[in-house]
Image (tube, rainbow, N blue to C red; front, top):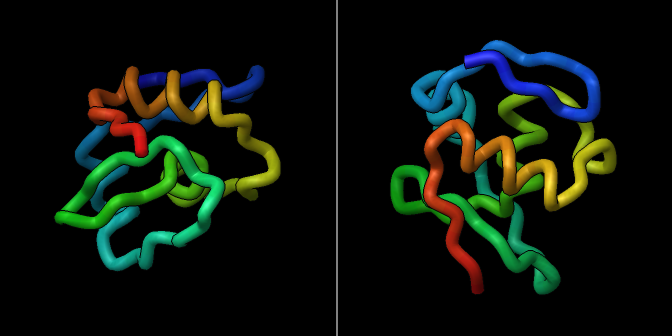
Length: 79
């Protein structure tokens, strides 16, 4: 699947995204509202997208992470 994040394109699918997040430790912050669950671990959506795309979290806005992860087929949960 070809995804656009702020004008840059990435070719990735859900299966590959899950592989990239396997073995990664989820960050725990008190300010995070949205998560995706992989292998019974909850990842903040910005962390998940940063790992999957190999970019810095600072480059990602929550609205972009939400949209891209939703398009990949992930269920987004809210806390």
